[in-house]
Length: 271
Image (tube, rainbow, N blue to C red):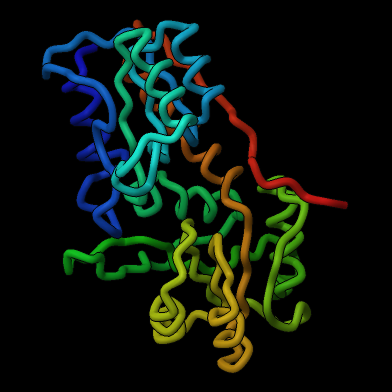
């Protein structure tokens, strides 16, 4: 394939540029390229760890597609770790394409992946306004699927157990009564701490909100408003969503080579 082909598919369909929440890194993050540059080996990774870059160079990967960039902020000085990563990248003509927050909202992206993994039914997209005033479907508003013969309602405890089992997550933080029914769930597959998201979810009739972050303001608001709040580690969800993109592109370009590097979640659980 040529670079412009895969770039077009990503930017228009798999992780659209217009779905960015903020003006963060997106698109070609490292390397110089012409639209006709030939790409033969592509690697997916949640982040650009030193190990993932080493793996890419070892396998002579032409293009790394990563959720996170080398840095989330403008580079004002070069620390040793960044120097080591750039030195590695310079050893082979490798390009880096960063998806960033656009992959949260995308069809098949992180929010939708969580919804599907939990066997929830889509009711409507959860639209928010990004920093450019554009409407972005950052999350999904979902309804429980009742598969049992008794049609017993889903409660918070059932949902928490489903999260741990289906997403292979050891611990889940939550706010609310674990025995309370869950009827309408808002899923936002990012670590976003904007209290207006919770207010908007309540206006949409949601009684449960699931995301990758709970700070004290979130927890306090949820407790006082009666909104059930769930925080999950996002690494597994990000990996599942990226593997879906991996599978799609490997079928779209069957004559090219695809790799997936699992850096493992850097956050550990002490039992």
